[in-house]
Image (cartoon, rainbow, N blue to C red; front, side, top):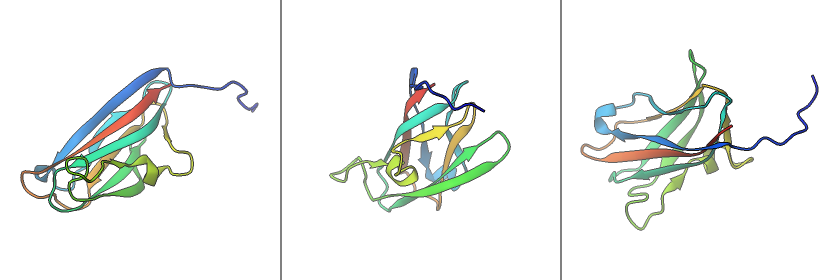
Length: 130
């Protein structure tokens, strides 16, 4: 097969996400679904108002199986206090600085442990569909 000799750029910007609470316990939630031609995630913005650190596990789902790609530690109050928000791409895709998600695959996440009652953690994927 011949190599692609033309650069491919993101065509449509994306900003999709989800919010986690203690009611979600450790259930997987979809952050976003990749577009028809795949997507590139340039930033995964994570904020929490929890009074304990939150660990989020991330997965890519091919429609049948959740493939674990890594865990991101979110310190107490990240993005809500003087502690800056966390960019999950720096942990999950540090070499490239982005994550490529194949066409119609899902990016999912879950809390490794149940969050504190009445607290929230928000995950927002920023990038684009090809």
